[in-house]
Length: 75
Length: 471
Image (cartoon, rainbow over all chains, first blue to last red; front, side, top):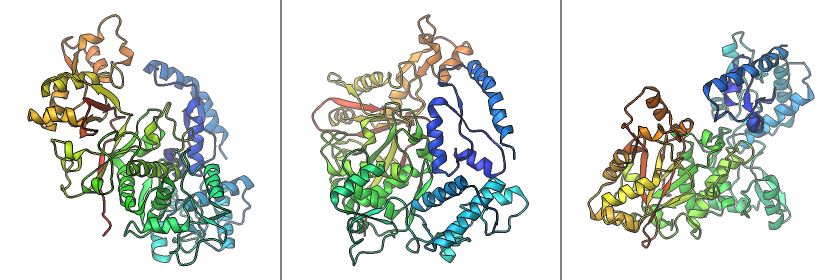
């Protein structure tokens, strides 16, 4: 979330992503940083035991939602 | 200043930010409530219109990169406050000149007693000691155990333990990267039950754990068990009664208990490392209440940890290292240093998992005095012990080639060797290097029981910080 805040301050639009188990941690950090714009974008948990191709598949499935989140927040 | 009306939720967000930032203790909010309100409105209007809390009192440059430095807290605010006593907008002011949010001191009715030095922390009035304890519990300023209410008198007394000015910023505490002042450390030290003479050790511990190589940010958030272990060495350990002897990792010694607890409370109350919030350790371990020991220098055949790590012998120091709880290593039969080293080493081979060759991080080997005597008698240095553990605790690559082997859990090195078709007899070490093993002598003089404290990840390395004795 520190990185997300820093990038946004440079005018770079972004979506912060976490697995469902870490969404609350992301929110807690966002609250502490007064960086409570869009919610953390959830992807299924866990990632740790996945092989590279499984992670790639997960990323592909999450991408449309992330793009929609980005496009949807344009002023 | 913007004339646009911000959204109510944006106003609330900016108010929370301003309070939270001032709560870190480095600065305060301006006592002029109208100025604060106007500035917060301006920040919120910019946040709504421009997407950032740009300072409303500057003419914003066109270039985005230049504008970025003016998002609150703006880049120049530290210099401005140092020079002018306030930031450009006047929202944040120097300690002692404004309003003080954050972890407060608690005073029983009527505020702080007269004659005490002024504290930058705000004062919360409570009816009595019981009400103070209840408030600590309610606000989650404690760790679940009863805490000592930090009254103005107790905090003032605690500050007598250091010559550092109360307003001095000691470090930035992750994960919130909040600046922590000597005074806020003192408030947490009172909560933990410290005496003033413990304060310099706590301050050194804060410096050590906040140093970049230690990576407190990741450690505070990890799902792993590891947490900071503080090892006190040098003359102060004996002077203040830190225990490196019987049951050093356990209960019963005030200095170990309160110093480790104070450091944990700084992590929670200043850094924001709250279990279930940003802190996500799956199981945790009891060292997350307090995890502080001394070395048993009197029973060690080797030089103290701080000397080994480059400090003078007469210096006292705190070394912090990320560590799981101690895992017992029993050997009651080895007669020689070599037998004992291999016995301890193979017992350590299961840490992280039996598949993890090599582990990625530093490991603490806590050698008991009886075991240390075997190494000392045979003339083994710490370096020799480390080198033997590195060179001899190895498994052949074929261990991961059988049908029953779970290669998904193997280390990146093993997976790479397998992928490259390396010789099955290639020996893979348990430890990434001899230097990755920190050897300390800990424990009572009876018992052929040492322990290993598995570490965390390679981006966290131990840090040693000298303790500034009170003059």
